[in-house]
Image (cartoon, rainbow, N blue to C red; front, side):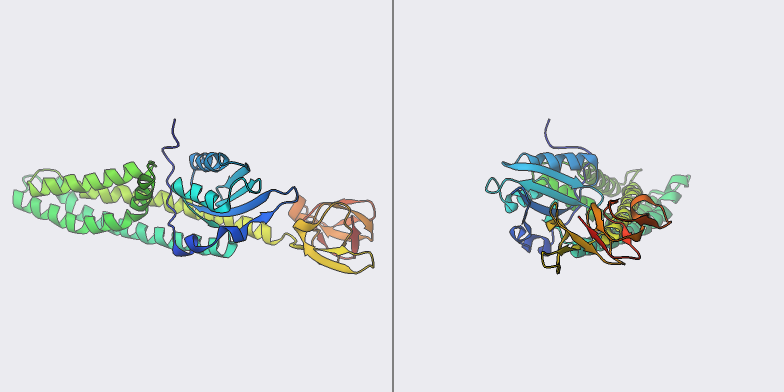
Length: 333
């Protein structure tokens, strides 16, 4: 079985900004020595896409883990230094028919907004085309004894409305299908694109030959229905991503590590190690799971447990990361 999976549309558009960024600049070293790269992948929409990307990247030499989050579009890859390179990882994802770039939350949000606007415009164009094409085709369906000349006029009017609308509204599908076929693969958008284009071609043939049936309305109506689903899918994913970003924004980004002389050194949370002593002032969040060594305070655990009532914590209590310190200074280990 090949990696060609039905139902895996790769609709991300590779922009200049996405190809220009050097992925090597975004590689970071993990405590165990492994190198880690986070990418934003555009166009992965289903479990089939997820499996294809994770298997493709995971098959590279030295790759330890490759995990893709479909909701955020973030692909996290860890590998043994020297075994492969960040550029090869990006090329592998691109060769699978998806757009990939170093993960930047700001750029990722801008990309989501651009995709949403594009789908909304395509949906509007398809709706306009479907409604106005029906205006010409419904009389043909119901017209008893309609003359050949009138029928031909109706079909040509349908063609004038439906063709530009179908070609414009279908661009998300056509681009995805073309990108996939260029890589020697096929996705769900390939049969959709073939179906729409063949329907238009057959309809033009029937109209030229003065046939009884043409299907311009079917082509644009199919795109309209498909775009409804794709736009709703985009909106649901955008809502989920927004909720995830809101939660991440509540996480502590830095921790105040107590030095031997009693001073505090602010370090990124990922650099905190076991047995570090941390100072947490009122109004700050607990950066990592830790045990209270000194002090007592009320804590807001709503983010962790959902409980809205403040909880009292003192020496010896184990505190979860994400809890909000409300009233007193704490020293944790």
